[in-house]
Length: 274
Figure 1 (cartoon, rainbow, N blue to C red):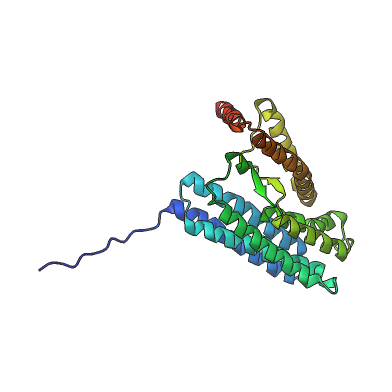
Figure 2: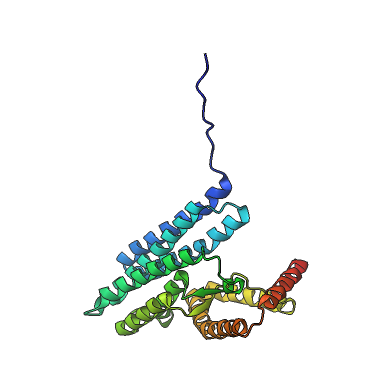
């Protein structure tokens, strides 16, 4: 008598589960931000979104490091981004100032959420494009959702530094939110910073700058965050310039592989430093 075949019970590897844990924690941070905003605890609400951004930046890198990237994890990450940087950010802004914009405050909040969803959908479909040039990996098309959330919340962050949450006009907040919504779905190139490298001669100054930033961050956290997002906005014109330069080189028949070789050489130098 033959015994019925038994299926092996296979467990999920920890390397695949760990990045998803960070993504779930990012979702929890976004939901907690909404709760804090309902209680009028604006600093805690923004801090929760900042924590969600940190977790979002770590889960993908952890997945690549552990070789545990999965389709499930990618879909979960997109949902977490929409919740934390779309819905939660829009709710914080609406409960803070946009509800005072009559009419149109809720419409602006809705528009921001819709643009966030469209931005994520376009990004996910662009990943499957086999004809995408290699050098475009250094850029995003439009503003990524974590950066958009930071820029949309910048008026609120500035209000922490100024010392009063109602010193900024609700119409300024509305205009800024509308601008960020446009930037998310626009074709404006922005830096991805995924392959950012530090040249050998700038390693020590960079470490000193990081130490000084950490010291200031302890005493003036919101000022440092505001300066960070201001510098990011300032990098957008330079990203547009370098992106257009790449396009002109391709149109002129010049191979852009030279820049990739230079990047590989810089990476080898970085490995020698380590």
